[in-house]
Amino acid sequence: MKTRYAIETENLRIYYGENEVIKGINLKIPQNTVFALMGPSGCGKSTLLRAFNRLLELNKDARVEGKVMIFGKNIYADDVNPIDVRREVGMVFQYPNPFPHLTIYDNVAMGLKLNHLVRSKKEMDKRVRWALEKSSLWNEVKDRLEDYPSSLSGGQKQRLVIARALALKPKILLMDEPTANIDPMGTKNIESLLFELKKDYTIVLVTHEPAQAARVSDYVGFLYLGKLVEVGPTGEIFEKPKHELTEKYVTGVLV
Amino acid sequence: MSGYRLRKGKEVLFILAISILTFVGILPLFHIIVTVFMNGLPFILERGFTFITGTLGEGGIGPAIAGTFILIFLSSLIGLPVALLVGIHAYEYPDSKIGRATKTLLQIMLEFPTILVGVFAMSVIAIPMGTYSAFAGAFALAIILMPYVAVYTQEAMRQIPFTYREASFGLGLSRMKVIFKILVPLAKRGILTGVLIGMAKVAGETAPLLFTAGGLYQSYPTSITKPVGAVPLLIYTLVQSPSKADHAMAWGASLVLLLIFLLIFIPVRLSLREVKL
Image (cartoon, rainbow over all chains, first blue to last red; front, top):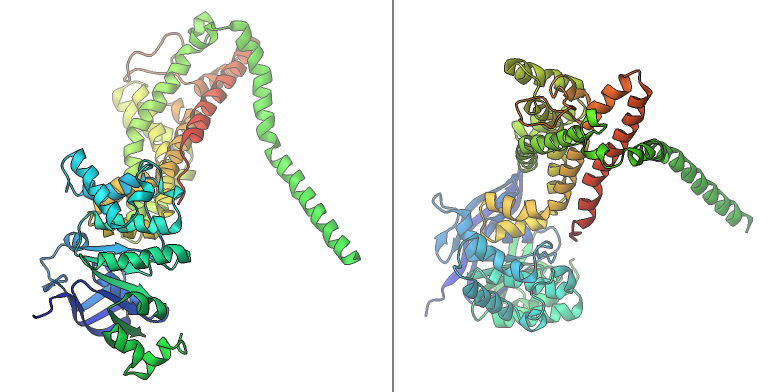
């Protein structure tokens, strides 16, 4: 059976002003996998990730060339509205950022409410519960849905953000170093959550920790100075990398 | 050991110095409040409730108090919507030509001599209408209120970390929804502070009302197209009078003005829930 690709890029180049930061990337990410994008700080991981849901456009200096296909459709085509792309491709950020002025419930419900995707309160309750169960936060917050997220731990906040993204029923979930600001226990919870989530979603995880990529991903891409040095199944990349740079990076020589 | 004592000594001296300077700095504020209370309170107690509700003929400043509240309300009604939109625009398009010009203009307007605003409102509203009016006064005050609220709005929005902006757009929301449904509520506390500061500022203004509001103290205002009084304007008039009784009354009115000012400022600030980012 032919694998269907969730994300494909064709000669993708990204510039900040005159500065080329992503230098011609061809990448295929299969459906229902965890794809880890690893590389040292400043290599362009976060930039590349933000090209997958057109969030990059919030930065006025950024310019994209080439194609990004989401399930075969180029999201940079003229007739594509970035709003639709972002509903289909959810995002989780490096710093756990639930909206501090909204309750736990409203954090999950807000995207649905403002997009008019849910009609009744009952349906909303169901969807909020579903999203919180999916992000395995429900049991911890079910009795305090009206509390504010400031009462949650870092790991819980991050799972709340995951629920907020899942509530819109995206097909792809982008995660930009989701455990960088979280304690080890919280990190463990989120990593095990990834195994559950990939049954229904395709996950692209940016990490600067090779060990994390090795633990959770099915495929790995190694990005260095804006170029994709090597990409392949996680086992192969870590056991017998083809490229010297990759070997240096996974063994911790190159940081 | 002696080096340590020298260091400690310097530190104590420094703290002492800044404490004294701070005290000197805030002394005028306390002096104003204490003087106003000491001179105003006995007068108000003597006149009793009539002072707050009665007309000038009855020995009260009721119409002036009513006028001040009417002017605050009307100027907010005119000024706030404009101010909020200007502030949001300056935040959202900081690098556009209009955005940059707006920021500069707001800075100028903040420091603009308020008497000129009064002259302007007189020439475009009071003269064409042929009369002083609450509307003309409120229009002048709205122009004074606007830059405060706009600058505070822009500043409050600017302080929202970028990650919340990304998160909002990440939910597939339009720019309008991101701004008005998520970011503005997120900056609510800062924006409300600006609104209150703007209102407190116009509550105490005298100069822009001189040629616009006119003054009305012998009866309560009935229409926004007719002259209206205001507490600061009344104080100005009373102090100019040669009569001692009028001066005493001016102290009473000053205390009322101070209380109106604090009434706007303190409770809402306290009751706003702190938003932790």
